[in-house]
Length: 602
Ligand code: FEO
Ligand code: CA
Ligand code: CA
Ligand code: CA
Image (cartoon, rainbow, N blue to C red; front, side):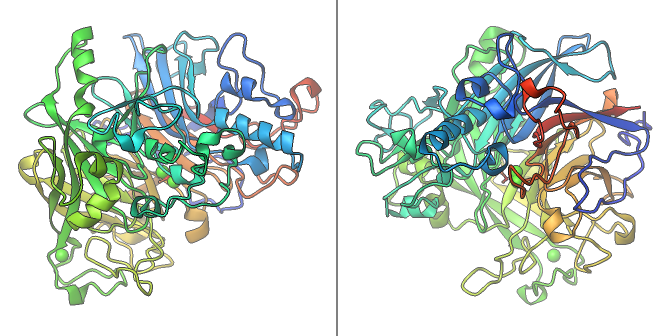
């Protein structure tokens, strides 16, 4: 492997043209799928057959559009692991043959409900550095779908805002969907963010809350309201159903019988994900982005302290940490004159986009800090509370990840093409480009390096783009002509040496290359150096990067390959690239299959 402290050794790949339907990895590495949409999880689960899909089969198979990913090693021998991932959404147009038959459409809606949610899958292998295989029938295997029973926790659980006809207690919502990014906690559970939940509902609600979350009284694009009345707020008793989505979900992947939970204390928004760090005094802090143009960056600070050790009592205690604590939203101030932030992205005269910031309280010590809003209202209509607090409107915060070594917090702002448009907010030092097409990455240093602090400093680590084609890029002073072009940062991870890894979503439509995975050096003279590690197939997004540096392995979730195609005109054949006409009993297989892949040394 690489020299100590430098991370995996590899030569950066060249960017790959957006039409190419291949996975590209560096010389000396190979890739293969671990698990694909439709792969059977249980001994008695049906084999994937795209021509004979059913809701019952899909519930027992790996779901669609894998996004967040972690590979959690089990035991000391490094031969067993858990794969945990989100299944964010579905692409009906490429999953199913076109039909106008109402019964067929309803069946497809039920299949899609079963293809959403999350998966836990046992992995095994022969030894360190060897590729993993998923274990069909592993005792850990689990699917969570749009109909799995959840429990709400925290101050708003049981609130009248969360009650429905089917759940008069307001505590037991069914299902999770739109799950985008996430994080594994120090106590071994997995968090997942419910992001674009509004697109699944029909809602006649014209209140400020419904409007602010993008709910509308028109047929949803998924059509689930045709098969399950709770998705249509025009059905009496189901007006509050959308209020039961938009949370951070916590699951225990080690216990397939456990009830997954939604934590109201962390607020309701289009949660991208959450990542937890432990503060010097033992309290835990979760950093969270709300992924919408001009929405906000948040953090949660637990009331209780984390207990160390692996005892059952410690785990039970730690699993309560996200049920009670303080919620804040970020306000950023720049230190350069406003006249120097002209929207072009060129640096101000002090040579940096940087400044200071403040965490504005929304709920502290169990009390609302927002005039005219109760604690329940702040936690269910968190966006409205943050508007009142005067938070800073950001360029779509995606993953937010605290560095395990330095404690600095990295925020991927993926893009915001509306910045500076008529009637919209213009450039500020922390979001310095009008029509921000390529995105940027903010680096936050909490005061005294204490995650519970309410003050921080910040600087932009990267102002993304293709330096060969657009001049307003910035790589912390690293020579722009020596970096890989990068656009639309989305998911973040760190390797064991402390380098940042960024996966992207949107590069084909901005810089014309396929999305990929990039290593960014954070420390030393190469700070700001961006090197591309891999590239995903046409129209796919690179998600959930995991870097096991000591193993020489990298994992990514390849989401929505060939997304712009149709059932009859597929644009991608990832990951098998074969037509299985030799196995007619398994269908044609001429479909792309969102998959988790592993990259390892040749
Ligand atoms: Fe699902 Fe914010 O990306
Ligand atoms: Ca400055
Ligand atoms: Ca994302
Ligand atoms: Ca995305």
